[in-house]
Amino acid sequence: MNPIILAVIILSAIGLISGLGLSVASKFFAVSVDEKAEAIREILPGANCGACGFAGCDDYAAALSKGKTTDTAKCTPGGDECSLAIAELLGLSAGKIAPQAAVVLCNGTNANAKLKMKYVGVDSCRMAKQLFGGPKECIYGCIGLGDCVRVCPYDAIKICDGVARIDPLVCRACKLCMKNCPKHLIEMKPIHEAKAAVFCKNKDKGALTRKECTAGCIGCMKCEKVCPTGAVTVKNFVAHVNTGLCDGCGLCVEECPVKCISLVRN
Image (cartoon, rainbow, N blue to C red; front, side, top):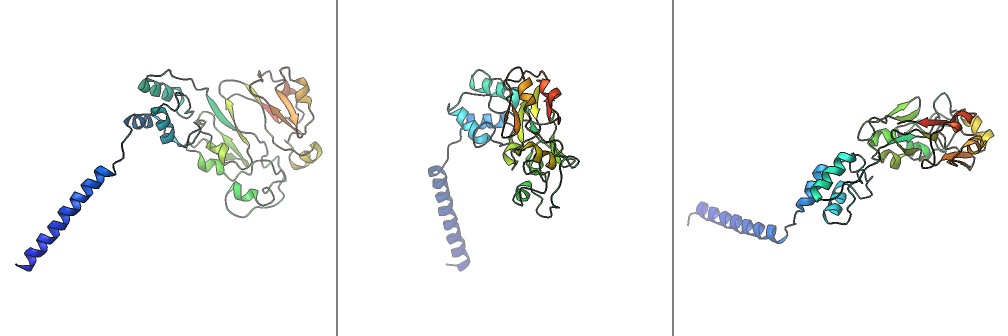
């Protein structure tokens, strides 16, 4: 037989056998597609932030599809529109999502907070923190190197005068900034409600705090004494506000001698 024809026959046979093998393998190893989960996944915004309490959008969609959860209001970036669309798809009652926005609780700007060193290194708050807590005298304050800026999928965060600031109109409450702030300075606050917030996390005694930052809480307890609802408490020389108890009266704001408390109206 002609060698060329023989080679063609052999290659054709190999191709046929390989094709049959792949066909059998595709049937044997086929992974069933959850069409309902796929439809839910199309509705979700795709931030994969984990704010819903699941590993990501795919995990939340799978849980909804399989009935592991019936709460359609877990996706804060998607909001009520997303919750309603999922509820209509699954035949469930749509849950309501309380609108929130992230707030950086620090006023340690370049003007207020003293520097103890000039930081030269990796442009990362997490890395700078390992160097004696950061370049500022206050080891509790915002370092301002933008770890939160880089993880925000909505471009809602900017560094202003050495401190991260978040635009509440752009923020979608995905909480990625909260997870990535090494100082744990970012908290979620309700939108459209005036609530008091302490823009300081310094746990040093008042005299030392004043040396570190002119805008730091000195733990004087005046805010706690004047609060009519018991929302303000002082622990470890720094004030805290229970948002659930705060009625937004503003008395603590007026009483604070260092003006580190503000009413947040997102």
